[in-house]
Image (tube, rainbow, N blue to C red):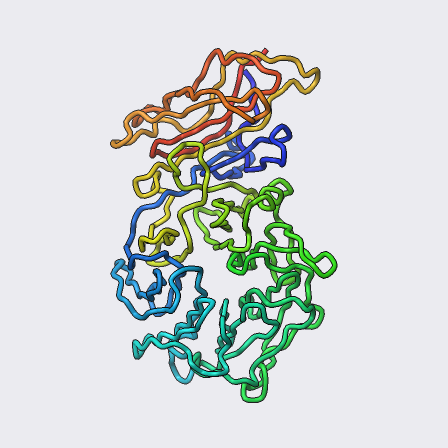
Amino acid sequence: MGQIPFVGPTYQSQSVVIDASRSVNFYPEINQQDSKSIISLVGTPGTDLWATVGTGIIRGKHVFNSLLFVVSGNKLYSVTTGGVATERGTLSTSTGPVSMQDNGIASAGVGGNQLIIVDGTSGYIYNVSTLAFVTITDPDFPTNPTTVAYLDGYFIVSKSGSMTFHVSDLYNGLSWNALATANIVGSPDPIQAVVAANQQLWFLKSVTSEIWYNNSVATSVGSPFSRISGSVYDFGIAAPFSIAKGGGGLFFLANVRVGDIGSLIGVVKSVGGSPTFITPTAIAYRMKQLSTVSDAIGYCYVDVGHAFYVITFPTADATYVYDDTSQMWHERSYYKGSAYAVGRHIGNCYAWFAGKHLIGDYRANGKIYEMSQNHYDDDGQPLVAVRTAQHIYDKEKLRRQFFHKVQVDAETGIGTVAVTNPVAALSWSDDGGRTFSSDYDAAMGAIGQYKTRMVWRRLGSSYDRVFRLTISDAVKRVILGAYAEIT
């Protein structure tokens, strides 16, 4: 019996006959060279309800003053570490992502006690000292603000469809000066998003990007920011809310400049300079086939030694995840009524708060969940993990192969009090990964049955075989590889 190709990332090619491999709710983990398996598959974290905040879509989160601020529907709430929510104000919109920043707690002339929110229509300030929530009415504040950044005491706001950014007065998001604006004109495409990273401002436009720095000019004289010489790059952003900070850099869904227009290239990462393309051709192809990409949302988080960038496409109903540690991709999906129906993940936004990874539900229910490797379902719904493996074929003569036995090497004896006899299902395709057989179950072992082997016998023959393993039970999932007896 010999080892067969089985574990790996999502890399389904534009034709499944080239590569059919997919990891849905599994992520690859690279182990030490002397480990039993150099690459294994680990189940993605499940979710458990942490708090209910209002009744709307969770549109954004921000941690400030030891509280979690949440926009649920058209309401702003503050939430304690114990999950107790208090309503703080009302926005003029109820849907769509929001951008949030703060300017620190005031002390000795530094900080402004202010949380700013922009929702594409208006800007709002909540003061954590006075508890006042107001709409920004300064006539120099831009209409239709889309994103906001904070740097060196200033709020910086971008406006949809404009090449101009606007800067607040120092530590005062209620006061804006018409002189404290500047035009991003290295290229004539409009600003889509602004973000502060590594003490610099990144302006992401449709087909280009620019980096600016603090020039120490007072806002009463002009913009306190200027472009760094030579920092115009031919990468734009395809979805303003796909941008996320993590791993010391920025991740975003990018357009590459071709002449004066942009073409979707996939996700890029930038650490202190020009963005680097990190999306394999197979993933880039899949993204380009999605019905809509402009509404993509992204966030970064670090867990169990992995640094993840999660990008969700709401309209296209898909979630892809890049592991910056292994540099591999996988997919995440919320249960859609069938083990093999793949959709988007439940998370709409993310925050690290109260020592927990917290995500907000994209549906209008106000729910915030703890995301953890210790949860094996999604708040009571099945968390279905599916690994579709690589092609197995006779590489020398393309002869028919007979599969007498297949054994999947996995952690077994992982049953629980709730799931006493967990099983894994194996199916296979003999037409290049287009259609699959019925599922055939094998026991994964009750509590403590660590010697359980997951074995399937008499699996027929094929010129080209693709195996698929599915685990739906709410138990720990660790797959090390697979072996087969083949003639």
